[in-house]
Length: 240
Image (tube, rainbow, N blue to C red):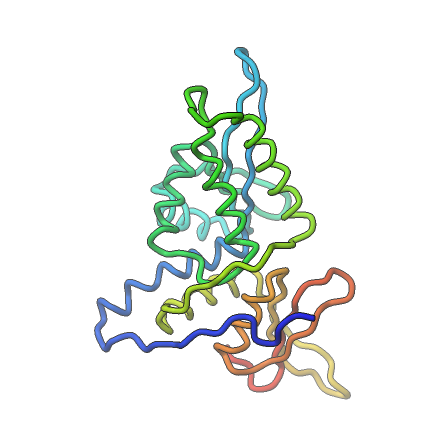
């Protein structure tokens, strides 16, 4: 059984100061990345042999938003490319991925065991990248990381990760706004003889879904039988 309240925060209001409030807006990009990111270690052939490089990718259909994210979190170092139904924003290579981590150091993932584990695995592999690495058995370390990232993508299982609880309301709100833009859906569904609006978010990470419900104070959660995602939905007095 899973806990009905796996994430508990003592919400704190931001001081009545415009500068204090605005500094939390970049947590929006953190939330959006959590919803859309993939982390991997690429194995490729080179004329001098095999080499490995870290990769952080964000996928979405909104090209302008990806350009903005490239500027905010990656100092415009990312490479944009088309995919079916949208675009990929890729940060490939040690220097580019280290820039991403500099952003997350300032605006960390508030909750989300899967996202935190992805970033932890990618961060831990950084010292092994490069032919001058002094990490012993570095190829074994790299291949284990590649396997762990693949398993995480397939199964989404993570041993419990402890969350910190010192985030202000505004930081949490911006973080969840990014999650909603990345993973949310809305529309009309039939209810008896009439249609009513609904608003929903579905993810593998139950902590994010429960934080969303607790923060907004509405909606219901269930586990979808077809894909095992945690599904939050509200259709009465929707919060948008």
